[in-house]
Image (cartoon, rainbow, N blue to C red; front, side, top):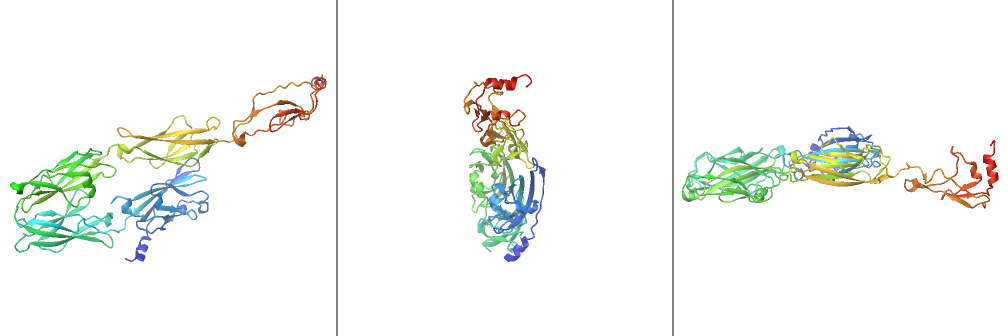
Length: 539
């Protein structure tokens, strides 16, 4: 299919929008939106107009600072603040991002301000058939004794395909031959393994070698395939092969089991005697590299731990083991082992804090959002369940979001900068494993000043005694007031007024410097005159 047709094919991708709007402290709301896109799209590929899908006014996006604020995958996508378009910023490879056959979801968190809105965007990356099935080796050699009876089977190498779902390996086919047929057999997982089954007695004298082609085909459209050459060499007798007690074993190991821990002791038997009945064990060549890195198999059949076991990296190992005798030619048989790793509480919670403001005004109402808090724990089950709290005796609290382990740090009481100008808010996250693990992060919250305090005099009322016949213009007293606020909110000016707020008649006798509070007498006072003015009968 040419590039144009391929592009048009994906232009019909669907968008599913799931809004879960919850009240979020006043006019602030949180929502979730989901898009689905194919992998391997070009950089600049338009995912959708997230602003319109969320009902945001496109013309306000720049002023409201619409942006992606967190997430390890935020570099894959960007938002155009001029039109609200969400587009692909970097090449997206589903196989690099996600585990095979698991829904590939990328979580993004976006924020707009004034008022604050938080939106969670979930991107589902769908698979395209961009990989062909591949065998670990180009060819394989099978040695089969001519005395082998029809019905005997020989497990073949599995093909690997990084693609998922229908695009992964669907079936195998074998080149035409009268001596062999192909059978697919369960291996303890979702996929099946190819088994070569003998249909007809081999005759070494008639034909020494047989060359077969095994092809693995995926379910993509168009399908992709990969092949391996199977060279069968017909050998003479060793007419009994080793037999395992069972074809499939299941073992459970604790995470972080120490190096040297015995996983399983295999025991195959062979009815032959001497070297024809002496058995050695080995891993099958097609098992994954991380199996070789983690486990060791000796010739006696003991599998032991030789590397680190980490549930968070690999919780299941699929191991193929071959038992071979020392006859000439040797005979072999295979078994499959599933090693399951159980989780231990070896990862503490991780706290991520996104602060929305450097300082908080002291007149902020209860419920004002200060920061966004995200908690993650790599463990699973009870070991990954986290309880979060903050320090006591602070005017803040954590509010749970609709998304698990997402919180908002909000005010829950009135703030007073004059009483406390800074708070150290300690956030503690503790999981419920045994023993529990915890993490702590301290957030400094600065309280900014507002003009909520009036000036105060050190003494009120003031009594001033003045000798008569004072020189006009002389300083007779100095008053001083203070204000608990800061900066311009604490700047003080002085004036003389009556108790009712009107200009005092004393202003004709006295003058106060508005900047420093120094009081000057405008004229010379005469005790007898002032006394008659204020205290004469009938006045």
